Length: 340
Image: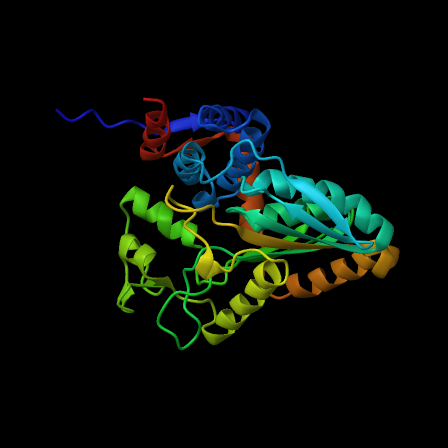
């Protein structure tokens, strides 16, 4: 007999954080690490980045259960020179290591003007924009680069070599305006969206991905077994190479083609890397920086049809914080099944 279909579940932001924290804490994850991960996943969910939200919980949990992710890892930071941090995520989740990097980068770049952090032995880091946004809220202009398990072929090639290798940028704005955040995957779309479609049993649009045979596909499972199409074709592939060098080659993390999957419990820890640069705006542009930025933004928005990147994210976030949000039944069933 088939069970009756389960309805979606409604959460407030706080309830969602508690629910994910509890689910991960039962799966060989320390309470502080579980809370750090839960906050990041819920922030992604309410921003509309569902591929980095609830859809990740079950795969994170089984990886912690198997030991592919060290759930009790404590990230360590070492300062090299005056302003270069080396963060060892210790094969744990990326989010506690990113928390540590941000905590140390803010006072460091206030002192030196510019500071950077290279994170090694790391894992999936979710929506990069959320991390640089925190730095921008503290007055920093920030950039972040991350590599990920192979999913995209170099331009002209036919086998996945690079990850989707996202990049993000954030800058403070004048007054109480939220930071300007630019966050993008270097594939045409983030691979997490394909994963979410596969879990939901949905098709993906033509042009997102290729099958393992190199043919265009709308089947998300075939896409996950194949490769993603780079954003901007050759330009996106070239930027993916740049990100690979900054977030892996330079700092000593695993290259994308050496990293194991973020989605299953098979193999060694992924060991990918992230590279964060924080610039204290007052050291460079002085108090006039945000005035000049607003002038630039006004010139841009003065043209009909334009909008700032991230406007949809801010609207989604405000709506979900005020009204809560629903999570699909198949994800709740998947998470609840972990304890059975």
